[in-house]
Length: 324
Image 1 (cartoon, rainbow, N blue to C red):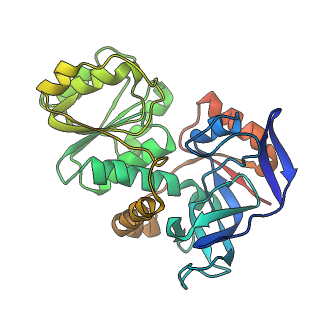
Image 2: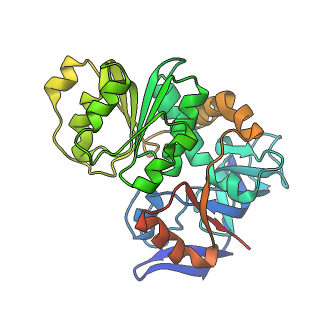
């Protein structure tokens, strides 16, 4: 099969043997692949949890048809079924998935759209609903809202009944579009007045929940924009891994600060995350309510260009590769 492989010279498209499904694994013939920011580090030779280094095939989500199943896979997952989900080594013609990370592709959904959804759906349901505890009438802020995952977070917040959704983006063109995905207020976090804008929109309280994809130097400002007894869910650290943290403000506002990552979760934990997501969100996925804009589509043989487009950080929504 064709696959993009990490080498000491960079990412190279090679012919490699297709993987063989082990116990509880599913072999998927990929038709489309969703790109994620974590792929940039893996493609550059860095580790992402236990994944990375020379010989690695990057990629963590996609859509395609089931080709074969290993022992212990439930009977409802069989060859020929169209599936979407978390797929290891997805920058290839074939990839392996734990059966519990797969969902059927709803009727009428294109491969490209199906491949764009799994990571965003499971990440943001876990952050917004499970850990963020967004409920009808509560307020939600997504830090770094113009990414595919960020847009999905705002839409999930609205679907779960949030009264106010705030999205942040430092790019004026992308910030202007956040209202299309549920933002009642869009702020520019490079503007020193952004905290005051959030406080004004919430009657001085601050938001009940922040899903933070930025962290870094914005951390203490984010604390100031969060309500007393609010919650901050740390999903990403695009603004830096280390920065000043106002411990006294954190204590005064009695904020619950939660860190999440899929890298240290067990297979059973991830399956439960997918199960919860499907229970709450799948009717909206099937109805087309939860869709992400596809910024650009590349072929697998254009993987270098696709990653460069992501690295430039000018896209809104998802970047997808298709497999011929």
